[in-house]
Image (tube, rainbow, N blue to C red):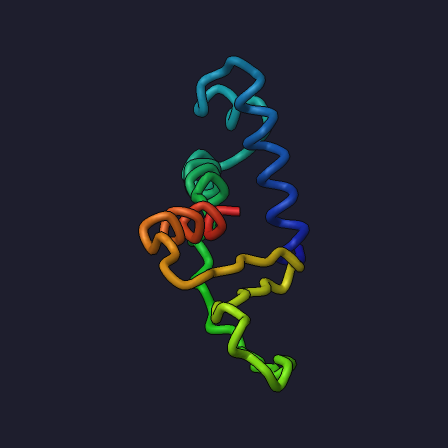
Length: 107
């Protein structure tokens, strides 16, 4: 049995067992499953995947400022791969930025 087929086979049994109201032992016996295997796959399939480690993204810097910058405030715009932007002006609230980034990490 291919790995993906095996995973689907056991996932189906674990899901069916959860909705059956039976004990694990009774479910395994009724379905001709080895109890130790059932326990193993139940644990293995219920583990949450590891949280992905944030990767370092390349940064591109474009100089599209006009030649006369005396009247323009300096700042920075962060553009994420998904298209959203965060504009930071001088004196921005670093604490608020940290909170925003924590929220975005969870998305």
